[in-house]
Image 1 (cartoon, rainbow, N blue to C red):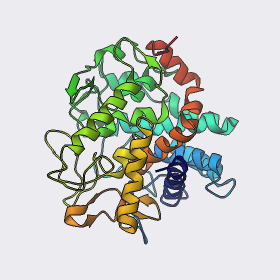
Image 2 (cartoon, rainbow, N blue to C red; image 1 turned 90 degrees about the vertical axis):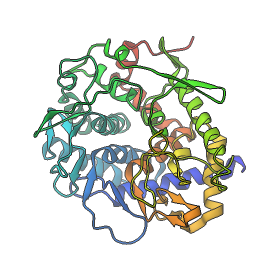
Image 3 (cartoon, one colour; image 1 turned 30 degrees about the vertical axis):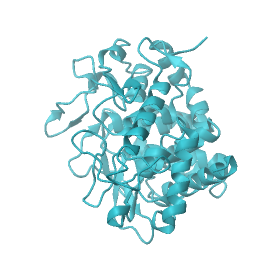
Length: 394
């Protein structure tokens, strides 16, 4: 696969993902559907606050790349931020995980989620930096400033997963390495309710060794090594524990090797066709890639697509191989389907917002670094990185 082929494919992945985030957001609220059909009308009205955060970044990317009609991304961002600030249900600035896409009302008894709010705020921060207009800056500052991060500590030194009106704080804490880097940076860098810098040291960093790779890991799918890196640029930065970018690169290499090792069981797995993370499956949504949910041969495009900044050549080849081998069965209006299992001849009819989002942002960072550059230009990001001593190598 030549370099130009890789660039062209990533460009098309981005273009189609931006179309998803524009078409599958309510034009009045700006809230993005959690999932949608690849083709045909979509009647499900469930919005994910995390997908909405990815969607805000998608609009900034679409504006830069010219993927949408001129002026459309800015108008949608303003409408979304206004609706989030004035109409969407929240608790002390934390948004509910799932919302009605048309009203912004909480559904499914979902929690006011700390980490899903973090992904929304990352998108807010990105838009604030990208447009730097007084109205957007004011709305972004209001949304960022009203989040009561100290409240979410609930008297401890690690953040709680969330809160519900029925039972109060959830019993789970962000006390071990996962997709938490960006959330802790947002909380420590907050101008209105910062948590102590010592909270950065309070969560555990268990070390795994696999096939010669040593890295910080958790009992969780590959996406935990991706999400924070979509917005925050950890390249060439170290704290006293790790170079987190290199850590995610090692995790991706280990994951690739793990999948290749399953090729006797699943013959379609191999050096140019690998990758599984939390996704759809023939039997519903599965959190693939931990000891409690071993792979069944499903392939998830966002596993490789979301790691393209860590292993550009290897991950790009996976996406090209998927497209060349399976064609329209895995590729449609919004890009790649969420997942597929070739042995069972199963191909998901859906795309999932957060999975499209991680591929989009990582493709853009691999090509231009623009998401990183814009987010890292903000005082919030600089303040947090400085506070936890994540400094550039000399």
